[in-house]
Length: 385
View 1: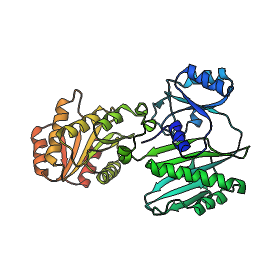
View 2: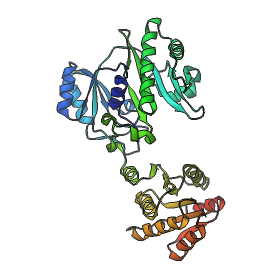
View 3: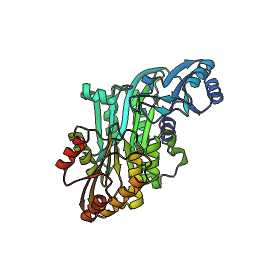
């Protein structure tokens, strides 16, 4: 679950990480009041769940109250498009009005889970303010890493190693160790999957401040994270993803034209590979899970069919707890209830009650293409292009 910048900074601040003075505003009057508290010299930042705000005009340095209000009027209640959003962009409902700072140096700092290592790692770089992926590709030597032993946590020597590697003056080492320790504690205590501070600023006054921050909380840990200030802003979510989430479905919208429905994340990845091998592109990731019933499958197909970009559907099921006949009944119910033309549906079923499921779809005569394996699925999807 992604947090807004202002939420991430509030979280970090509670654990002793210094952040600039700022206020959240959702109206022009609030923007004006906040800008006045900073004597007009401030930064106006859109609050969205995507990076690339600065390059897209979503971060503006202003030097007067009137200018802050003018910028806010252009941004509020409009959509902003960045390289991390859809072509339609995402809505701007809130702005962060933040004090302007005299920054001498910008650094990068993040804490995240490394699945390969099975550990939390801390990453840091002197190339703050830049896209870290590009830095890693062009100059990987500029990325510092410390893997954290889960049995002992972050050690002081590791934080000091990073401070030295970043070229910080000795006078700043104590500040950095305290800041990183606080950020790490926030990461652990709130079940984060990512905390990123970019840039971490060294001010002209010799202070370290997190002048931009993002954080994501592990969805599977939300049941024990009850802090209302960390609530998810669903206004940032595409309507189709919101519908899937409230229906208990794992769904991610993609840019292709083949709607994919599976039961299991690993099978989903294989399904998308098959789709690509057929010269097509997936329109989504959609996992109905192992315990789905007819209504849930019905809802999943309904969501796929509601996407105007979907020109064909690929259902790939390995029946276990979820029986194939249940999936077939769900497909049948969704196609009968559809008020628009149903695109071609390719179905591969194996496992529990596969024969029964295939029989239901065959006798229903709704134009489903039944296939036996991935090779046949690839050929069929390609023939429907």
